[in-house]
Length: 413
Image (cartoon, rainbow, N blue to C red; front, side):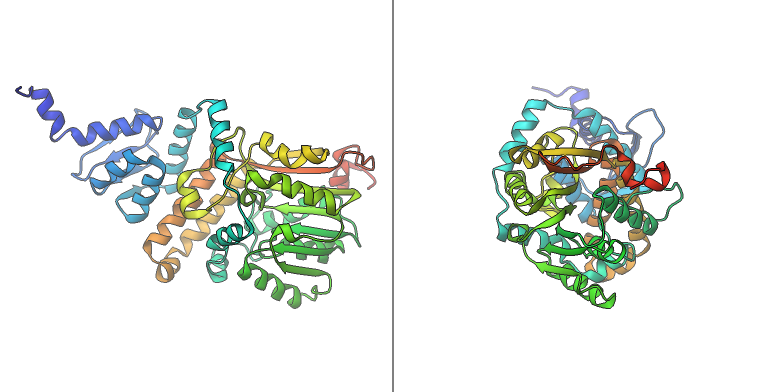
């Protein structure tokens, strides 16, 4: 059968643009421009473009068609795709389009999330997953984090706050929320490089036991404790949260729940129930979602293997089996969008040094991760929850939020 002129055209020179336009439609037609390997260029929409996505090689088409998320991440990392213009503006536009396009079925997403959670993070697997990300190199993180090495959402309580000021404000915000008082015993699950534990001891007079499976982070934290004369009040344990022992007045976990895995929420809840004193307070700070969904495939493969980002409903597995009372929930989503944007700026400023040490592909991967994270929080794809809770029969709880910032409300303690 003879081909028509239209079929001949589509199977030849115009096949590329046709396939790319179909790809753009599947991701919600973001407000960007596209440039193909032959130099031809077109706008995806009639609205102003936030940047240009260049297909440097035809092979990127097949990889995007096969697996959009992993394919895009791998093609950008490998240089098969290039982004021209403001990278964060581009990622904001793409993520915004995807978020509006992919609402999906609530029940289907919830089922997929549950099925994914059947793969438990055993202590060995959890340690391996954490070290994949956090044991890269302390010097690497020093290049673009603040001086305290805080790698969680900052709290921009002032409009013009710097990243360092906002991270300090976050440490205080957590301590205020749990009404931390001198002499209290604190257990921290997942302590990063130790900034919060050291802050609680130095500025609030607490005694802290902090647990972490990252050897590089624990060694860094122990050295900082000795430098600041706090090693008699802060003990950093190179151990999984399942090894937590003793009793405490306050329990905190900032940025660890994402690595626990939904199947282990009950385990963590049981631990908090066992160690927290009858009148104690606990706080969990975690990236979250407004509805259940499996974490992005590229993020799971290259950035946070074994990670799961919970909805508030899924977090109930932490609270309900032990009849904890949830006292306060705050969403700091826009604070994290700004935090990740600040990290990205810092990262770009030292990208030459990162590339010199780790290679161009590594630099491109981390640029995509940081920009994508900021865009995720900006679009509402991601949330940041801080939840304060206690034993269900604890009546010695604050009646209002005034205790957190008494100097602003006139409250007396």
